[in-house]
Length: 348
Image (cartoon, rainbow, N blue to C red; front, side, top):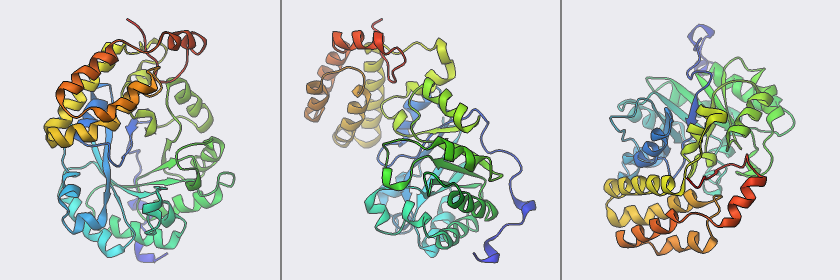
């Protein structure tokens, strides 16, 4: 590691960037645009990130990528995240992002997507630690605010490689590190290695945000008991489920949404998306959002799959009518046996 990239201990942040109980919406490619973040904000999310921004596309002025930098006036806290590996490109992208109003800039060292890893970025870059640190330092030296990193465990059982990476990132000027508790080969499924995360968290001397597998209040409390109290980040657990923020904020007193509530939130979210992108593009990209809202809530596969046929507002309103009818009767019988299931619905 280059000595010039190392920050003196006096320069390191001495206070946590996030409150200990912060609930954070992760940067999600193809998802966390302004309408998506507003949906989460309506249900108690105070901390959110842009979509993952490709550093090269940003430097070359890609119009779609530049739009990722937009921030709604009502967003009180917003972070940006970039991915890349070339130090010159990352330096330029950090300077560009410095011109915008963000609370923090995050460097992605955890994305497991093959198209990202094939370029030596994301989780693949984290495995080449010296190169990863040079890349991070290029960002830190060219961004005017706080800089963080999002990583995955490098080994599911041995915390030492992850601890080394985090300590080096800390010494290079990272203010906080988010750790996804799976290794890259697991992608987004399978067991989350909370005991390894705990060993990491207790050994690094920097604020750690826990990420991975948190999809309900019950799971949230379990993670805190296993990893330790602190901020947490939601990714797939918040997809189609902005209510997860309310659920955790209210705990056992939380009241799940009704089919009417779900229909109303989908309608507001999708109409805002269409206003933001235009009707044709908005409806097309909203199909995946609608599918996520229905997933795990007892709606039939036929209804969920029919979302691909929604191509105009007439179709959309008809689809909302079907949602308001609610899930199958069998779902509520199943729910009686599984009262702590994530993504719950109540009839009224």
